[in-house]
Structures are given as C-alpha cells and as structure tokens.
Length: 137
Image 1 (tube, rainbow, N blue to C red):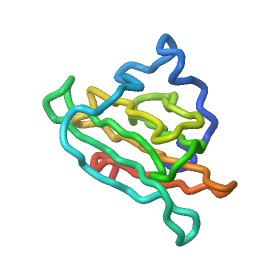
Image 2 (image 1 turned 120 degrees about the vertical axis):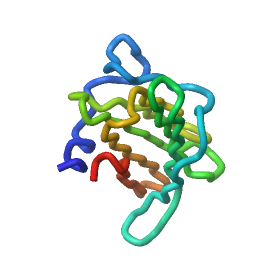
Image 3 (image 1 turned 90 degrees about the vertical axis):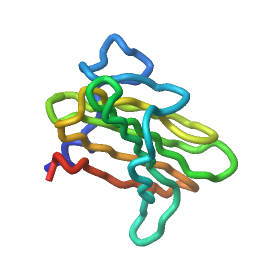
C-alpha cells in the first residue's frame, strides 16, 4: 500500500511552495544532520544511482532530508518524492538535472512514518526504489 501511495502522480510541485503540505521544505542546497541511509536505485537487479537520506533529531522536531542522483556525467531525469504518514499529498522535486534532485526536507517527523521514493532515468531505463522510516514498520 505504501508503494502504491508513492507511485500515484503527485498533485503538487516543488516549484510552488504555496501548495506544500505542513512539514515540507526545499529544495535546498544541503541537508541538516547526519547521513542516515544511502539506498541504491534499481532496475531489476541492476543498480544505478542512489537515494541519500539524512536525519537530524534536533532540527524542527526531527527532520529527514533526501536527494536522488545518478553520479553520471550529463543531464538525466531525476526525482525524489517524500510523504509523511499524516500527509495526503506526496511532495517532490523532479526534473532533468546534472547531479541530483532535492534536497527536500520533511520536518516534524521524529515520530512520523515517512515514505521516500527515488528515481533516475538513464538511456531510457528507470532505476527506482522506495524506502520507509522505522516508524512505518
């Protein structure tokens, strides 16, 4: 169910912060806190790209922050999607980037389930992955 919720077409855009759900921030040029997870993006068993997630327990009531990238020269489609468990709308940064999509914050999340979805497209192949915080389990 969590994956289906994330894969629905987002109804908001990171380019219009007026539509952001409460607890969203970004895109920014960096993330607060420590790297929590680096998750490889996959197409079947092939891995290309990454989703990187940071966590700070003291910043704005617990903040997760994420980006998705591919580490390959040139511009490619990249997307990072977040949805806090109490949001009805996922929030994302999506576009054609040289390095990464994001950094986007989910704050007020110390005790919230947070869903992440990272996606890169290289040579017409989508590499993607979903990741959930421990509060979701």
